Length: 148
Image (cartoon, rainbow, N blue to C red; front, top):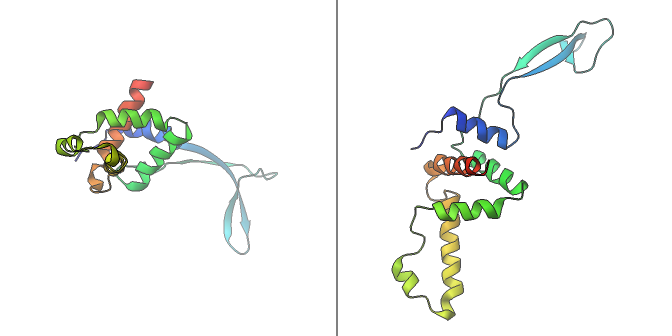
């Protein structure tokens, strides 16, 4: 199974619009009878603000939600077709066997195309083997690198 390096995970994280570095939050403490010490994101007169840094747990890009977040970001940028062509060129699975291609007749072309499209989609979304998700995420990062 492919492990993604930190640089690749960072690139994918930023691509989907999430923070990589810890970010600073300034809050103003106050006390309530019901909950005790609480924090307000708005300034409170006469109260010194407290600053804290929030560290996020980074995505592994090995799960279906991670993969879908990346694919949605590609779609949101309007680059899905461009990525689709790249993925087609880099698909290392036999989508159609030579016998299937040789047996294509005009009347069965639509059925054959549906079958090929279905197999490619299953490969791209790792429907038969979720352990391949890091491979697809690595492919996305390589596509982004070639574009950037």
